Image 1 (cartoon, rainbow, N blue to C red):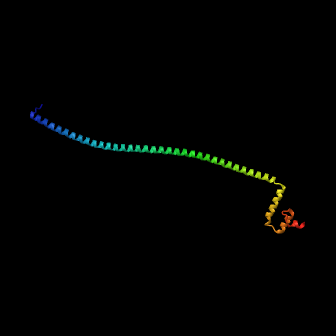
Image 2 (image 1 turned 90 degrees about the horizontal axis):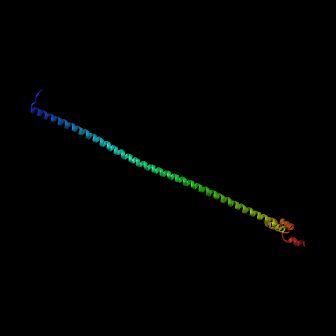
Image 3 (image 1 turned 180 degrees about the vertical axis):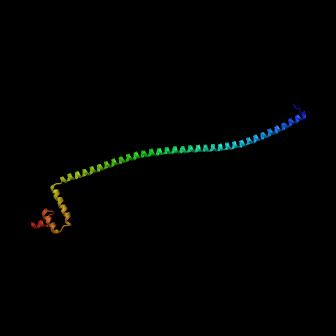
Amino acid sequence: MVFISRDKLDEMVQKARREGVKAGRDESRRKVKDLELKQVDLTDKLEKSNAELKVLREDKQNTREVLKAKIETEDLASALSKTKELQDKREKALNERAEKIDSEEEANYVKGYADGVADGLRKVHEITEKDRDNLAKVAMVAAASHTDIATMKEINSEFRLTAGSTDKKDK
């Protein structure tokens, strides 16, 4: 066993204490530096995470807007399609109605024309023989402007169109 004096012991304790305090201080400084570096790293990671979160939130908002616009576009397309379908049905109905009206008008026109022709034929049959003779005379007189005088005299003596000069001479 070795004996140490109190002064030497105090000195050794003081030295150990200083070395311990120095080692503790160095260790604390190293830990503080490590913590500061970790804090900087964590701050950078937090800033990156916040930036990513911001981008994700903006992306989420943009996605919502795009989906909303897509839904509105699909709704509009559906409404336009339905409107076109209704317009096509209406146009078809109008065309059918127009065809029906046209065919009715044409049928009425044909009916009226046929009635007119039938009436004309009835009237033709109602004409008496004397009326036919008078009609023939009128036609011949009308043709007289294009016929020479000798032919007209011959026609007159045959059909007695007028009480012309040949009748007076014979009497």
